[in-house]
Image (tube, rainbow, N blue to C red; front, side, top):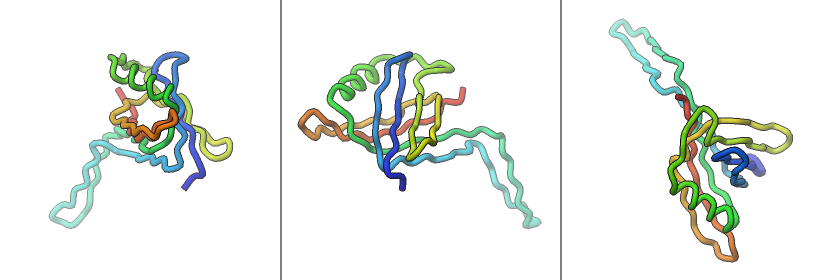
Amino acid sequence: MADEAQIIYEYTVGNDVEIKTNDLTISYMRHGVQRTIRPDGNKYVDDPSIEYRVFTGTGIISGTDQNEMNTVQMAAITFDASFPRIKKIYFTGATTLTNIVVELTNFSANDLGFGFWEVSFTMEEYTA
């Protein structure tokens, strides 16, 4: 498991929320893959090459960031070829993933007090 990853979620140009997490999971999905075993015992795979990633994790954010997520995520978000997106994921060291257009399909927050919130999230890559 990585020591810590930092995810910068940008919903419009210059407007972002940073989430630090130590349990980031990236699932690589191949939607539409079909595996068939025919009567002759041979296996066939039909793969339309539609793939996307699902990013899940938990982290701690400030009350200011939680207010921003509440204000923004409860409003109408315009999806296009650029936003919302994961602007950058910093892994341990210099490794990064950048500019992945996503849908924030799940975001829940639990008040920890002292101005901090424990959050869990699911972001699915947008592949229109």
